[in-house]
Length: 291
Ligand code: GRG
Image (spheres, rainbow, N blue to C red):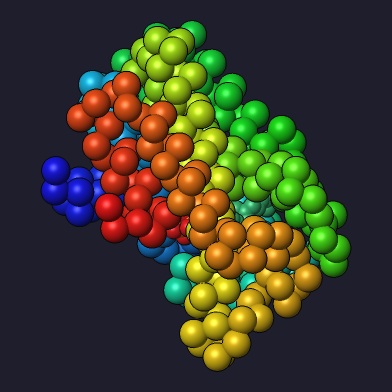
């Protein structure tokens, strides 16, 4: 398959959907702050994973843009809040100044809140799926985004600053902070496509391993990127005294673990045959693998 074209086509569709949806204005200037971050590029990985999961089940992922784009709104809200001074205090995101640097802290906070709530409005605009399937899908997305998932993981992250944590804690941290939205993307795509229970099970395992492999790769790239830039192996998370897969296993150990995890993730897709080609390519792209 021409994966670059596959990815670009879907990226364009997501961008167009998001732009159009934001044309419907609210009653205040918060709309500008929402659009600033939501339309600032971004790889759109989560919505594309949702669509590729539907494709793996033989259903066109194009059908599920509202739910897919809702996930991107939730992701963008989390980035805006994560960048705030009370969290990571970042200056740049997606190649431009962070939301609070441009609009101030109060408006950035509210832009994140409004994106989170708009996400649920947009997801519930999804047509052509049975109401009970949509309700269950959106309920699961909510769970993945909140204290059982992304927010919970972020809090574990805050609590782990300045100390080494165990592998178990690190796994829980990332399973929540990063992994939960990947699980939401895959399970939403699967549910909306009418997946059978064995398919849902295999895809959930795949999503869990994908999130883990993505995080290990991110930790490796963080070290290698900083080492290349500064000629030494002290990287940003290490400087903040955070535990990473590299601090836990060494660089070589983390690379071996990443490879094993990617292989296991790809193994979960075997039952879907050729239809899962896009999901395989996405996995390799996210985990820096050539083949
Ligand atoms: C504030 C509730 C709350 C949660 C924050 C997403 C997050 C949780 C923190 C962001 C910091 C971070 C590095 C998280 C790990 C996940 C990750 C690599 C996010 C970036 O996602 P990409 O690569 O970014 O998909 P784009 O910009 O392409 O969408």
